[in-house]
Image (cartoon, helix red, strand yellow):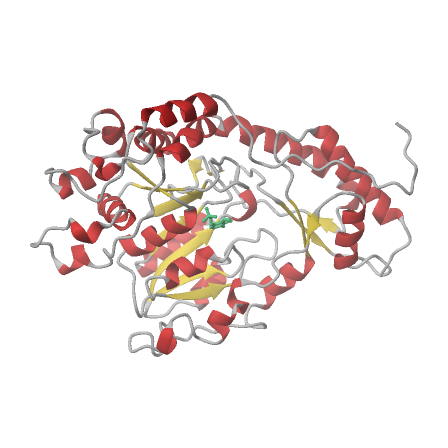
Amino acid sequence: MLKNKNMPQRIKPFAPSAYQSGNEKELLLECLESNNWSSFKGATEGWSIKDVGTMTSEEAEHYGPLENRFLGGKFVRKLEGQFASMMGVDYCVSGNSATSCLVMAIGSLNLGPGDEVLVPCMSFNATATAILSYNAIPVFCEVKNDTFCIDPDDAIKKLSERTKAIMVVHLGGNGADMEKVIEIAERNNLFIIEDCAQAPGVKYKNKLLGTLGDVGIFSLTETKNISCGEGGLLITDNKKIAMKSRLIRNHGEGIVEDDWTDEELVNIVGMNYRMTEFQAAVAIPQLNDLHNRNKKRKELTKYLLEGLKGFNEVLIPPEIEHGVDYCCYMLKWKWKPKKDMITRDNLVSEMKKEGIPLSAGYGRMMHENPIFTRSLAYTKGCPFSCQHGKGTLAKYGKGTLPVSENVNKQFIWFKFINPPNTKDDMDDVISAFKKVLRKKPVK
Ligand SMILES: Cc1ncc(COP(=O)(O)O)c(C=O)c1O
């Protein structure tokens, strides 16, 4: 159809990333009619907690007695068993969000007051606040200017005698430089936590992200590659991490035994981070379709990038980390205008007028949040100036991470790379960019 040039390029909205993949309805109905809507209970019904807590996810799915409700019901166990087997690990512990799973990860590694965790400053807030939730201290690192994942060289500069872990974020479906991260961790005796919320099913040198460190976390919130509304998955091969995570998830303090050591007891202040059976029922078919959904994302990304190749000098896609089988979660371009070209913020608003919802990077990066800049996460200045936290060299606020801050100023993001959007939808994005960038600049 011939379009009037004053009309926006696109009128209809893009399809959101949550869509059904298979038999969600059937499983949801089965769950509803079973009247087992959670099945979790903070009790082991007479079984030894160590036996139940360290049962692999495969055992819990196929052989674990369902009457033992500490590990949840049929759908939760099935989801966990399937994800563990897909990732090639012994344990998957689900939760009601990736945020809860990040908290379980920090808790289960026995991190706490005075411990520092290296973390890239560019991520969703939960990456850092999970660390704070145990009164440990996030020490923010630069991201690489081109991949937007943690810069290992900066991480080395931020090491201190208190550093206990490094948390990487595989941002936007790219992967961090895990070879260097593993080298740093081995040399300094650090745990590795992988935040894979934006990179499920992505490989690094033929190994799945999330399996390269001690513990990996995935999100099932509505905007992610697969979803059940809200939800999270933690994976590990370490039975201590699995057991402690299961205890933190499910009011664990009430069922630990009196003769446990201090190390075993630490951080078991149980919460309720359980996933419901409904969520798991929806997540199972989504999980089974992950490969296919990712494949479609890859095709759409390739098509979009091809279509915009002519603008590559100014509209710069992420550099894919060597060895990463990139699967775009959200396209994060850098806009580097030449003289006389439109500014980033005007480009975003002009594209919006054309019906293409772009966004302009993080409103505030994590290290700029007032809880950090004012050292006030908890009362009495904890954890930054409490007895154990004293002496941290961590610095917060604008200007402390110039490379990442500069990237954030250049960012323009497009998120609807997800199926069921099609190449026709990507054509609208390509045409809108061409239209806006060929207009006389509105500076
Ligand atoms: C990198 C990253 N980490 C953690 C989270 C938190 O995920 P959830 O919303 O499932 O708690 C998100 C999600 O939005 C994320 O993008």
